[in-house]
Length: 168
Image (cartoon, rainbow, N blue to C red; front, side, top):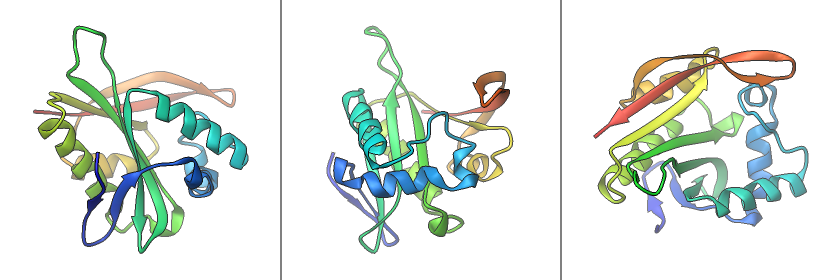
């Protein structure tokens, strides 16, 4: 996929050279509680990026004024017979939050998935306490389908997730 430019930012494929920004997206206390794994250093960030690049997915950096502002991924979730669904995930560095960047990036990647990849369903999952992320998905046109109770186990506690989806 090519680079996508908007007035506010551009989406470009992520590389291992983006490890510092990727690490920064995960490291603040607000973000840390939302991710199942948080890289502790540049080497772990590179390992996670490399792992994501091997998946059947699209992995992008969100750049604002040539600075790493966040990432967005669209990972296909299908078996060999059903290639119609994917899940979107994203993270924004703290100083770039609250500017509508994540919402616009989710809209762009969702439209790409529907119009270029032929997807019929794109899901997004966020913690029930993550009001900002649920607002991003809602503003991007996703509908809340339900609560996945005790969906994840992290740091000794069970976490509930909200399942959002947009259907074409």
